[in-house]
Length: 155
Image (cartoon, rainbow, N blue to C red; front, side, top):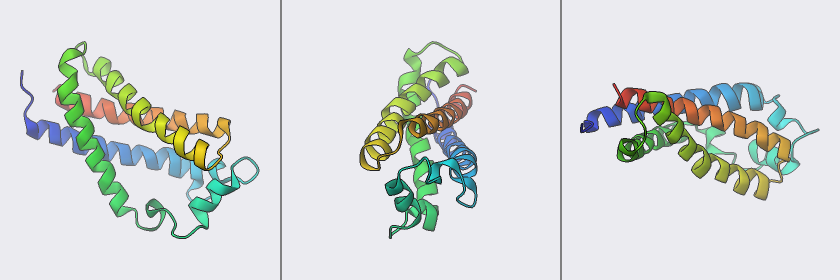
């Protein structure tokens, strides 16, 4: 069965929206804290370099100062993930959850694990335990987005 492109785009938009929402609930609400008091900005456990990048070094990250381009970009990533899902899922076992797990694994390992290894760990000196904490967030985010995409496309 050929999946209509309109359903793929809808799944991508919904997946991108879920990606944004779950990032707010994990990283912003829990990790960084709504007012900056979260464990990921705690100077007794976090790299001073990473804290400086997020809070003091100009220009501050866009997600902090002007989040609209980042939100939009994440929506576009969701659409890209839906296109990848549409392309690969016919070779995966049937079922929303079975396919969502495979997409989530791709997103998690090819994007989020790479990001955490190369940037927070490599460039900012983030401690390993905080890196693991963030990878748990990323796993939740990847699975939430992938499940949304898979369920909409598999309707």
